[in-house]
Image (cartoon, rainbow, N blue to C red; front, side):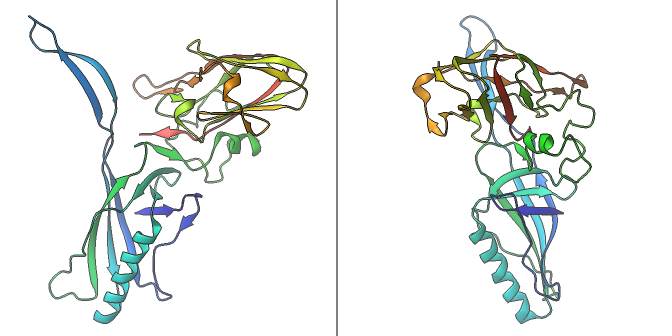
Length: 291
């Protein structure tokens, strides 16, 4: 079974009438993520040399039933299904048993229900989905939700398998601390520039002329300007803002990366050791990415 969410992460019920007739979700099928590999041949040597690889895409489709009360009602329900997915546009979908790992998709291809011979009041659907954007499933909630709720709560927002149950630390707000540790529960490293919903906020607790953040790979983000108490500098994906105004010219064009904090191969957790300038309140607010 599956659940559908709009782009504001609100659950969207499947089209049904008051008697329960309509679309019934059966299953969501998601493939693994493929790779795009670049190889070169070496003169005089057998085989090829793999020089570059990046994550590619994946396939996904859903199976469902149209259940109706009569032959005429079947056609009405079928039409509602067609309109429902066409009007949805881009949306998020998740397996019912992993309701907080959402994949962004759309229905682009044509499909038609299969009606078993002799059964005119229901039809089987196999609907192919197009992946929208990157192929990763994202967490429905963000790390700042964990902070605002005083830690990881058993409130249905974080499912098993999201690498949070035994994580060493879930602190994402740091007040005037220069050596900090940040846990990334994703299955991938997060390069901030590539994710518009990844936000790092620096709130100035004193006057200063420079903000810096040195990540675990020694990439140093530097923002230089005349800053006073109360000023706010934000990294929001590729956007750099000061007090809500784009200020990209005032930084050194280096974006930090948060390395993934859990290894499925070695069953180990690890933290991102980060150094920041003194006199700052630093907040990390992002959605985790999963296979």
